[in-house]
Length: 192
Length: 179
Image 1 (tube, rainbow over the protein chains, first blue to last red):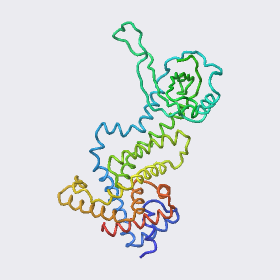
Image 2: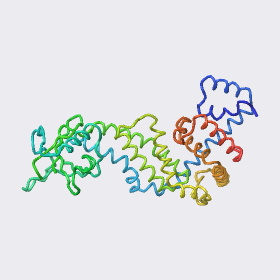
Image 3: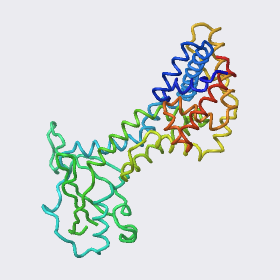
Image 4: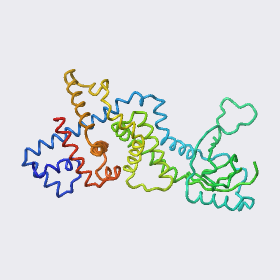
């Protein structure tokens, strides 16, 4: 067996160092046996590609259903959808207070620390998102009425925001978030 | 509801950047991942589950500020381990005979050509099934477009070992399939 035959696959895959690749290519010009072997490896590589595609296609009917595509994309696409909704909405339901309180002495210190820590380091996992038109006035609207400011509600598990044990079970929170033009959260208020 | 409120800052810009990266990777790698998992022996449903779980793991990884280096091999490794977790089914499925109804060569020009192609694929299927597990996995990851270094990271073996393993697997298949 030729001494270069063990390097043919690596050459085919572009895994040889430049100098080594040149040596093997020079050898291929001279050695018919290695050239044939190289062509066989190329054909086989193509066969493996086609084989893998065929295996995937064999399961395609299940994958091709529109509902399936939606489910399949749910993982990564949901992330994008949530982000897109957040970024597209110029302003969310206005907060009940114009300015956040400077300090909240009524809350335990561990709670405040937990909030600050989360705000500093971690993004908050979002479990559920629901979008709906802003609350409409009670009177009858005109036919051309358009929603003015869509509101967004995000359900955030308490244990993702607060330290363990800081929030009793069953207690939920409501948050108002102001989104700045650059997509950052300008102000966020949380109420139990 | 009380009137108390506490200001917090949600890291939305970072979240958006990570989400865009995850989406780009999803578009680029979803099919290669599915292909790899199906070829490992997972059913289409199982492969889709594993791919979905892998991208959720990716999102968590990026959200937690995880490294973005070698993210392709990271994703393949997560998917590979997901497949490993279904080891029993995976072994059974890959050892099972090829589906006789599997239309591997439907677009061939003539029926004779189609039969020949199908026979070639059956030989390839049998030869791949007889390969040692690592060789088969190296070959499938190579078919997925991964470099030797990335394959090594997925399987936890040295790059030089990947080179030797791929070369050996290709040589064996070429001999058995007479391509």
